[in-house]
Image 1: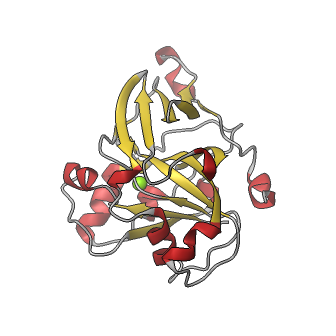
Image 2: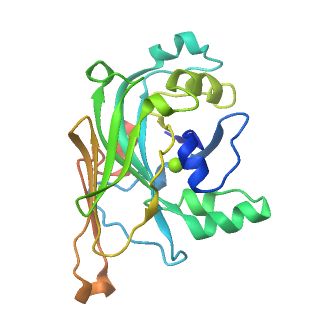
Length: 230
Ligand code: MG
């Protein structure tokens, strides 16, 4: 399976990072090794001093497709979830300045946090409120109605380049409010008051040397299971 991520899909997030509004969706990939399995701890990678959270609505592809017309795109997913696109912002900034690819900043091990999925009928994907709380304070408060490109347009666009396969996941972009994580933080993500994801640092300040993070509400126990999932 692969993870296809969309960048710059919310105007206010584009403003907060002083980016240019793109003419087409910004697309990048994460490998399946980026997914943090439920039982594994999360470590802030040693190569970054500025790892940011980005909460995003996810959709899971349910069948193979290529060159999908946006009016048929809804047939290619049944499930919706939430995830966090962890980003080494300092590394990304250097890559951006030099016009280099972002993978070192975006696709490192543990950089994709994937929460539980729900059937799409449970939500109105065109008008879906979602939030991220850090240490019980709201930091991101988004609504899919502010997306520059809607889910079906994104599926159509990315399928011009990549064959979509069953089990692939699309991260649809983050709203404004991105910011750094630190030891001791707890992140909780909600759709319409339903908690779909929790990432928690288990270790106190006095035990910093063995910094550990726990992911709850994730369907993924291990990477093998990932590839076996229907
Ligand atoms: Mg993102």
